[in-house]
Length: 465
Image (cartoon, rainbow, N blue to C red; front, side, top):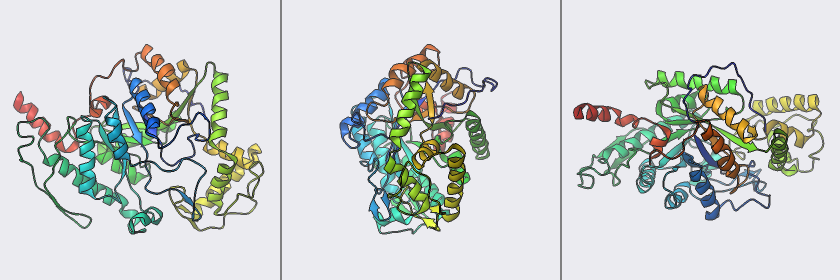
């Protein structure tokens, strides 16, 4: 884990901004240390319950569930070196809604392999039953590896994945807008708008059955980092996740780009909140924090995991190699890898990665495992509670981010130090709330009305005045 760089010369543009936290309960990954005795089950409800209760005690805005539609595979066999699998996100969050009162509930849901009417209804049901705390992390998929679950294979062209996502979101918003506001005099009178959508991608006719929640619509999250993904977020999302959570200059550049795109999409500059994924490790002293971070890095990348990661780039089984030895002497020979690690990797990309790894390994005399730890170890914040708090505040108040989506390195106890030690430091500095000030996720994040409801909300306000 790298210590984020500090830039005392970067101007503070938002001196009163508050730090916001979400927790990312990951799906398929190797960064959660599942093999340690302290690790809990990745599917037992008690694990999810402990994590979300800790997050809500720490006044986190949201609990975010990563989800994959297929177990990870490697060359035709199940990949069993890390956390695999996750219960259905909406089902799990509905259960967690019953034991919480304020924290938001973010479900990762795929736009390629879901029916728009059914998905919109399930998300709105979660939103209503939780009192306005639901959110949808919109993800796209176009690989045949996932599509095989649905007897569709790779039926969707890569270039069309965001077209389908846009169409699905448009249909969902029509459905959410068609039923009157919850609590209104005609909320259940049967006065609903008929939804009709006929396009090349969707053919939908329905009368919605679910009213709007107190927050209007489920909140929209999006995590695409490509230019197309950023444009999609700028036009549609309330929150964008990012990978820019270690270098302040990179985070500032990403934020400036997203805000330019947001304005170009006809929205206020601050309409999309930015939450990079990150990890936090604290210790009593800087040396203690560094020792803990080193332990985390090495336990996230076991010898077998290191060989698997390098083998994925080389396109072959490297299990017979010594993880404490050098990289393979020969070049990768594959032209394209499948989606066994989540996405396809082209031959050009594998050669580029292999060349970079070789240069790094030679320069620093690194073994295979040392290289993987050095190159792909979880990045984030480390230090004493006070120093971590100061770093987080700088990132928020310079405008680089609006908050952080924290990935615990172990569950269910991975948030304990953050809630018990970092949050009080932030509160002492006036940069973190002392209590929830609202009950909906939209209120927690300080978001405006849903995009399709803003004209209505403005007209209502003008009429009331």
